[in-house]
Length: 442
Image 1 (cartoon, rainbow, N blue to C red):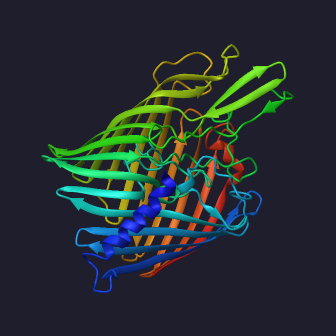
Image 2 (image 1 turned 60 degrees about the horizontal axis):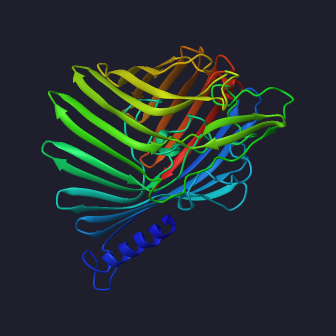
Image 3 (image 1 turned 135 degrees about the vertical axis):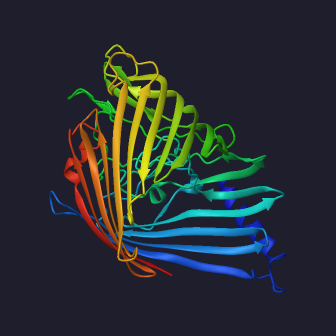
């Protein structure tokens, strides 16, 4: 069914273009072409090897089809000369047919990033097509921002906007009195891009990968992706309202968790690994308010039917099902000229803890962000620290961005992992890197 959606979407756009908003020849009056050329080089500090040598072109087409209808199409051509982040050509069993990339060879891939139509029906705003959906407002950590799956080809080092995998979605925003109601239907069975073994950021932490006894034969299978267009759709709703100085949202989603549950089956011949995606109900909300130079913000979410690895040898499949509550509290300060400072506390709490779980019942992470603008905002320096208090590991990301011209940006960055090699961040202790790049927009 998803294979049919894009031709219908584009055919409908061309049909409308031939009516209102088009000239006598049926050509769209307002047509815009823009884009970004980007080049980045990342070098590992531990081995001095080139981790990434990327050239990317991201074109964007915009066209006003009528006075109230607009078409947007965003593509991406990416060339990675060294091919360390995703060696070869991933089979992408985690993606639906219409969200897969096209690989020219081991170093070049093409992707339709976004393609949607914006229109209005009465007071309702409607966006239909491939798009990104942003819930939540945390820095470097996700609580509610889980509607779009994520590419982990660079772990969490890439910007959320670039690492999110856009999905084919029907997105309606409907005014309800003083509030705004967002309704979502996502018939796109696409899930997280997990680096395969041999990739620079392949997962090795026992918090994610089951610990198996050495010398025992292991049979692995690819994740079993749901593929029923209707029955396996995700749905969601968000109500946004401004009350007494507070921006508040209430969020609900019935969706598949984007990382597969890894189960084991032990027999006399060895261990068989099975991977399945599981549904969960997510209920939560966000809040924020301004107090002088401070902004207090937060988000909270409770997910049913979450699955966590266990070391209990009596457990038949190696995972335990329980609920999970997550929240993040953030405090931002902008009282000094050209400075922005932010701190966050994040906790994930297992609702029904049982003995043998690989992770702690309460997992706590803190973040600290500092940013300053120089030279009339043409130069920006930023540092983000993410630290797990449970595993005593983390990552420090630093960047320097210089607007050399209005359409040319020079970038310098560094990413340093530290801590226990079994931790979520410490597993990449040997992947520290420095990077440099240039962006050219037109």
